[in-house]
Image 1 (cartoon, one colour):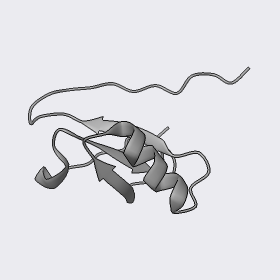
Image 2 (tube, rainbow, N blue to C red):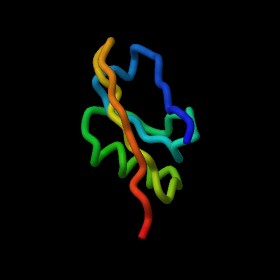
Image 3 (cartoon, rainbow, N blue to C red):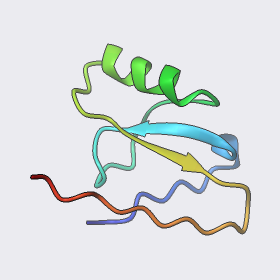
Image 4 (cartoon, helix red, strand yellow):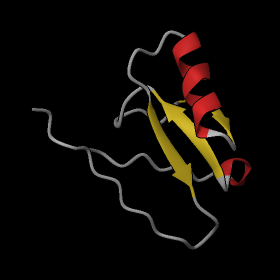
Length: 68
């Protein structure tokens, strides 16, 4: 899995939708994760990845759960 690094100040403290964990293209963004998810689905992404972009100098670690 590659990192999904979002460096733009524009997205700080927002949720962003990516098409998958390898993508660096932001499909949708906003402060409400449900609305961001819905916007990504509306754009045709079947299983969007939603991540939170923290405030500057905050570290977050994401992991994908194993599928059963």
